[in-house]
Image (cartoon, rainbow, N blue to C red; front, side, top):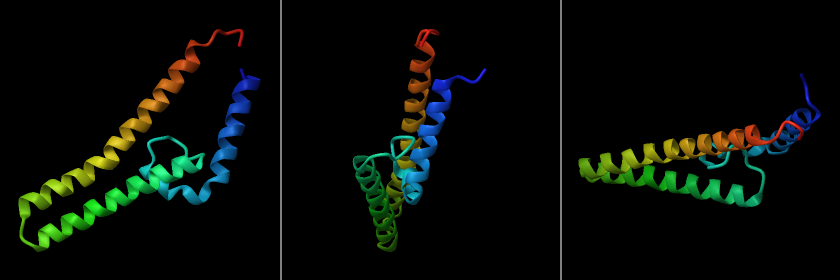
Length: 106
């Protein structure tokens, strides 16, 4: 059964996605499922910049023959997007759980 609230929510999600098409690449570094505000963009840019710095530092330390340090920095660079993805999944899970707790009359 299709509910009006569900249709409204899907329409809202679609509008947000269509407005922010140019931020799709940044959503990889966002802790939120969808980038909707300037603050989300700033946070995603910050995480992307940190990822880039970790990558450059890893290459630089590898060039200077500090292999263990380079491996540790590389591991942190891999861990960063993984942690952001887990954070995104947790937020989506909490949102779904809250939705399920609403009374049926709503």
